[in-house]
Length: 85
Ligand code: FES
Image (cartoon, rainbow, N blue to C red):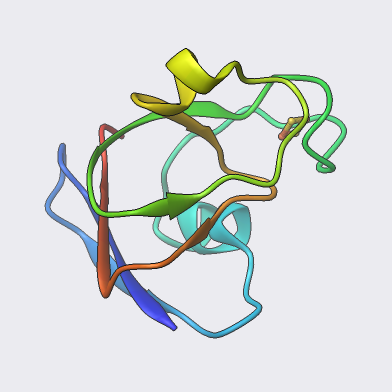
């Protein structure tokens, strides 16, 4: 489990272990595009600011992962993850 925070609104939510970041974002009212929801299409790309995302997608390059994640499949290894959303 981890705390997901949005830089724009300051909103936070707990994402349970095994929970979906995309579902949490929608519950927080964030507008996130999504299509495949399987880490393949690239639609749900979001910039992250703080924390240690776990990348499970198949679209981002190692370089892109330093600044972005795919919300449909990403997890988090830190207690808190801040997104530029
Ligand atoms: Fe396709 Fe996330 S919805 S990569």
